[in-house]
Length: 342
Image (cartoon, rainbow, N blue to C red; front, side):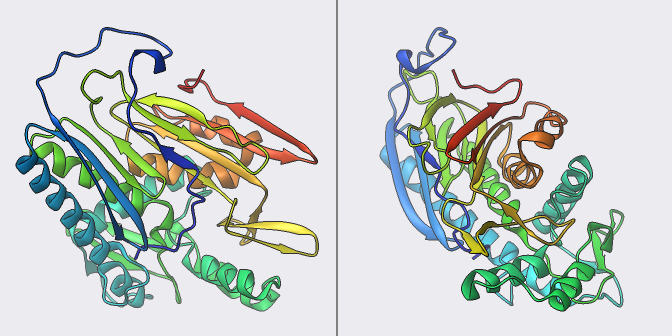
């Protein structure tokens, strides 16, 4: 599996939206009669639900099988728990004595991860693995990481230690004990690929929900879009319903994955620049044109918070975010320009 259940399942997908669900009404598409199919299977350590509208049941069932097969294939590429995955074998090469050639999917994730790292000023970094491992141990023990272990983990982290050679599609990891963690990007990439597999099979209306990383294509028949409810943090119980098509939405937060040490709450999301878990409780929901951007940007925005996060979100075309955080007893909410909610 790519990661444990880090997300708090804060994105809840609803069936589909009719006329009343849209903020900006428009004429509904006239589509031929279709069959709606939906199935949930465990993949990458979490439940995946694929919902689609197909021309007939046979075509829909074949499309579902192809979709889940693609997700299973990518699990074998991107898992950081499976020591035999392509990503794990690359991590095990650190420090690389020579470049390691990688397949298209891992290459694409590393390239996009590097782009997001630069655009977020290092708030997202796929090399954060040594730190996330340390903080998983901290959540189990309830103790702050020992200073010497934190220093060693920080020394192994740094996106500049991933050297990409586009000519040969090869990678060198230059730091000792480097460990790639695709938890903030791999699920979104896999969801995008599954949606593309469905499109290649002629499915024009589909939703892929990878346990909170949601991507959708065209709207269901007779609807303006897919209805997706997003929640914030405890105390912010009423979900906001978004109506989306050809988009992705991801929520990142500490509703379930956190540790309290000396009266302070630390998230499972680690700031790669400091090595410390993000303070909470807080949640960020990002809407973007694709899953890989929504996934990685939600992680970065969680690190940056509502003060610095909005300016970084706006560097990504078509992206918008909603920040929810607690200040004492008050629950605060802010959104960036372009947020599709009411």
